[in-house]
Image (cartoon, rainbow, N blue to C red; front, side, top):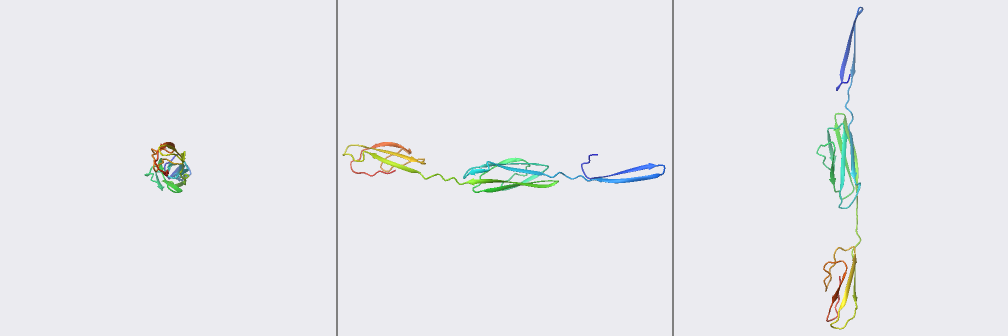
Length: 170
């Protein structure tokens, strides 16, 4: 027999010396659910995102902590925590419940500060002559000159024609 629920069975035997009966029960229990939750990647840079993926067996509904699986027993969702965060999922079915967790670690990536260098060649000129200003930078996304235009470039050179002693900066 393969009952789908707990069932009592009985047998009656008849013979010349009389009748007899016996009973037994087969208890059917629901299988225990399983839950699996993973984070990919498990470590992100500050401002980044990770994908949580969950699945279950023998479950009819799943609930999450830190994210919303909308009752689905499998799926994925993107999360963007700002600090280390442990997410959990609990999946329930007629056989009970199961829980799993996944950690997303957040690395605080600090870029080095921008640096800039500005030189004039030659540094001394006679009135009417020009000097070439050259600049370069590291870890900068744009540069702005004072007294001259860089066009936003992080490195370059431009000629200037000052008629008096002038200070330039970037």
